[in-house]
Length: 221
Image (cartoon, rainbow, N blue to C red; front, side, top):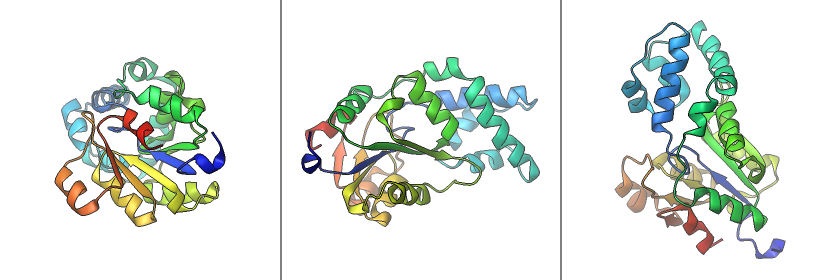
């Protein structure tokens, strides 16, 4: 597919709730990790806290101050070495993998911008055979908890004008970020999504596109 035929120069995807159903995974992973650290954590409490930053989750379970830095380092290592079995069990959304393969085949440049750890996101893509589809993974770490900043930095790195980029996400903040940085947006109104106020998304944030499954992206890309 020629350069002039592609509708966008770059497509950014959120991960959790957009193309993976990861609520149970995060609950089980945090529970396993903190048990190894000698701290008991209620899985349902962790699942209820999802959708905020990792730092917020740490604070909600009582990790603050100097302990935060150690927790970030140890959690990143845990995702790299201690959670492969849980990662392999993460369900993908309907048509998600097929859509990534199809868009990659068409020559679209794609990235993942997520509030999950970079190490975790890399592992998810690697273990599920998708890493080659994406030029970049921009996940959270202790220095970068702001998805908006990561989106801007990513587009700057690849020399992409925001108006030639598409952001695909399942929640209010995803569509807000697209509007703020000036890119088009696609609301993934999918069964695994984490949106809390769909009415606000449709009536106030007004995404450029909406899909009920990621396969719908190929209808306009």
